[in-house]
Amino acid sequence: MSHTENMKRLQELISAQTKGHEKTAVECVGRQLLDIARHEPASAELLVKDLEVSGMGIADAEKKIKAAADKNRKGNCGFVGWHEADAILRKFYGLPDRPEEGEGEVTPTEETASPADSGTIDLSDFF
Image (spheres, rainbow, N blue to C red):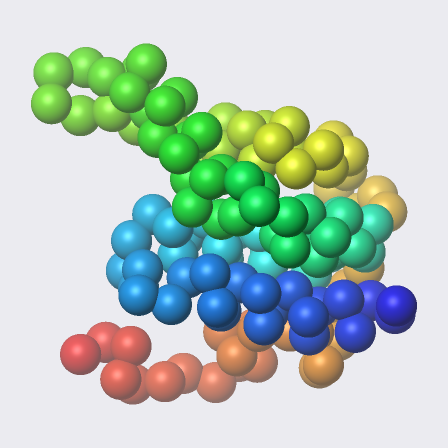
């Protein structure tokens, strides 16, 4: 499959797996996976395959991140930073290490870019 086809399928899988989890950590994980895949075609291909396997869903990955946040707990708050979450997701899904800036990345095309990348602002996001 081409990168465009992988991205379309990945968006479908993520949309299905995050339905009912809007504005939660599960949705955030889905968005982070899309960001990874958008710039890394090899990761997009792996994610399409993995997200179709039982036990490899977005909610399963989110549980791994939550477990790390629980280990980092200080008082009532547990936190995992962006880089740590990225490393957890890459390990969970068997994705390659994050490329250095500009190395091996694909520039998003109009077909693969999210609406947020389009330069347009949806005012409903602010309400």
